[in-house]
Length: 206
Figure (cartoon, rainbow, N blue to C red):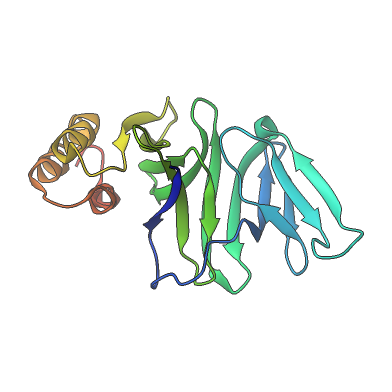
């Protein structure tokens, strides 16, 4: 029997409503232009490596559908119309798929990839959809990327197993540039989301 579960991350308050798949936002294109969708316009939250779908006058009979190809988008910023102060950034990583930017500093970025897609709740919280079956579950994974580019580095999924291995992969990725923080992460005893938040303190050459 299949069932859908929700992985809640960075919630400003407890969620009582299902996350919206049609939200407001801004599309930043690789050609340097940007397209805004507010008021009665909507963007559908993306998943996998699919094109981005957006709608002008989304709730009217004569709505206009717009499609942006995966490769022409630099990033998107999405928000629920009721909580515009909570903006969520997503990036189409070429080797991964549509990924939520969980941590972003001048030195390092942490992405969360959810294969089944995302929802944004009316209180601004973000939800990463995850489907569980009897012997498997859909993929939710974290990736790191240092400033300057390079391929995103996978550090593991969102399940509760192998937290020590998860911390060790983060530590090894940063220990050459910031050995003190790497050692603190190795010795930490927190869940995955709080562990990656420690990367706010990452300073190469410190």
